[in-house]
Length: 335
Image (tube, rainbow, N blue to C red; front, top):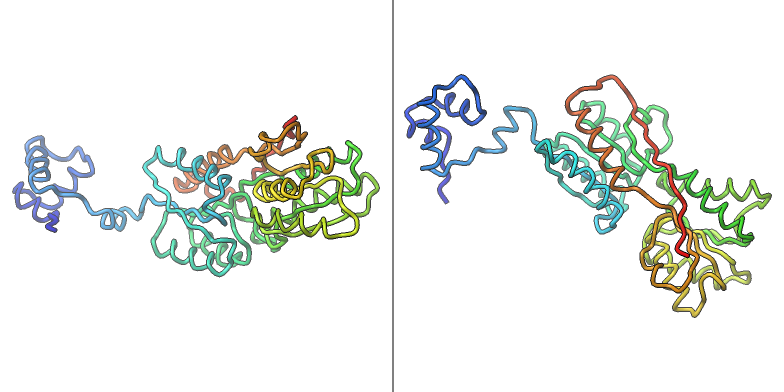
């Protein structure tokens, strides 16, 4: 298929390629007559400027890489929507990648986005790539951590982070069940390899310690999946002692918990009470479940991440590191 070049446009309009470039960039240094001829030549030849050439010249691709653990998870899609609605107004587009909670795949995706010369990266990390992420940030590429922080080292805390107050949210959620008289708790936690799993588990333990309870009756470390919630309930109900309440620290796992409890003929909340980190809409189909949940704000988190990205890319706040913003939670109940 024939594609016109800028040289062909210039020849058709009888001007230089520099004049064509100035017209394309809306420069005021072009006469009305030259602008008319260039515009007519562009229309006649169906010329489309090369995005690659333009990005090389401007040192900007107007692409932002987004790496999330699970691209099918509505929570991360809400975050992405908030980012897109914010940066899209400035002409930026998003390139979505899913790591599938796989450290090696995430490493390859980071390299791929860097080679594509994206203008910034937002990442909810699967863990294990702290050095690579820090190196990319030090090279001048704006990197914003979303939902999850990096593990361990103090120097990695130089990176921007937009996340939930995981420990406090899990503390308040567990405290609500304890106030209702439940002491035999089953905890469905996420992987300890990521900050959300570690922080939410610590919040549960803090609430129990304040009540003088040494530890939960059962803890199952899942993988933030529906299947993880199903496996947790099966594990709990194979034990000699059954929990009277379950704290599920991710709403996809909570959905699995509900599915397996209902399949087993158990009633909620009379047989077992449920508290979830994040709303499960299917809970509204149950009859009077008294299901506690943390009201998350993924869209607002995405908007803040988008605003932070724009300020970093425009170098409005160079030298101001890091930006840390933790979103607080409200506990709600499906009565």
